[in-house]
Image (cartoon, rainbow, N blue to C red; front, side, top):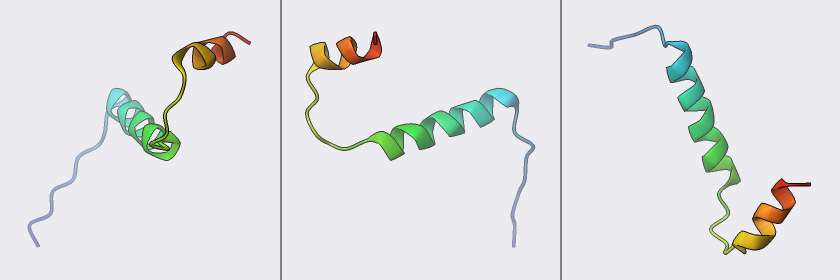
Length: 42
């Protein structure tokens, strides 16, 4: 079948997790920057 495998490093696993979180959170809706930053500081 010609498949190759590799053991992922910790950084690669974190990158994949971050990518999945970004894809899941993407709504394609406009978000007001000020409101977003204000909610981060709560």
